[in-house]
Length: 339
Image 1 (tube, rainbow, N blue to C red):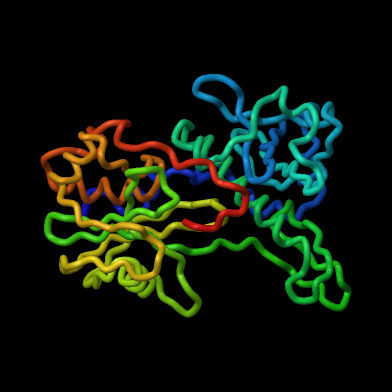
Image 2: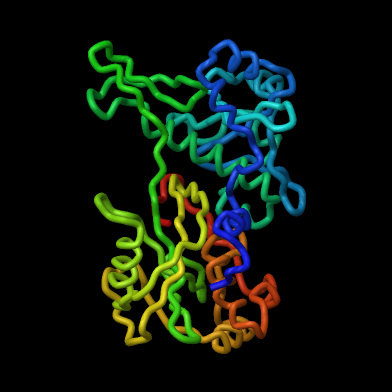
């Protein structure tokens, strides 16, 4: 695969990473400092409702961030906001507006925009925008699912700017920290062909590289070998790390690899895929140009893995196939866990 970039440079090209923001981790435990940032007039809040973010009606849509006074005018509170970090002297917080007992967003929010799925909107955003929204989505999802202690069942409360939850039981007092689920994603190549598959829930004609969650007690490379074999029956021979990407749908980190395998018959084994095929570079280009094959969106690590392999052929670049080669994934309901 392409050796002109190191792994960090490759990861920088992947979307959804809040790389620009200073997380100021050493100030999270300073309650007075956090509160001063929370109440500062310049502080911006990233509103989240049922895992979705607020966008305006422009074309293309832009994310809507709120000031403290905007939230106050809507009759809402910022007390449960989660500190994200600082950029150019300005603080950013995530504010989850989800009310399980309400059928929709808080009253008055519709005048400011529409809550949309980040997975769908991310290809239209600047890298800084998608990274900030992904960060907010991931941390608020974690809070939603850790309102009670996993050890004793007591309620938990937010602490350290929202980066710790504390069990309220004096007999337990457990500290709970945000977790990220590791998933491997791999471009498998054999001679001049790569292995692509499709899930039945994807848009028609969409194919992508192979991916799956890492299981307990499993090395990343072991997960690559297992997932490829379980899904396609193909035996991987060599594996190399490529790059990584946050994937907050809902709370994963995608660990990207390239691999080599002996080209052989494909046997779908675990029900994850409805089809898988070997594509040569010539076949891939022809299928895309004829509209018979759709690729993952360029913001995804799946696209970057495919790009590295395709461009290595030296005759053309994947990006030259144009925007028509991909369409965004459809919006998904809150809580979908598949990578």
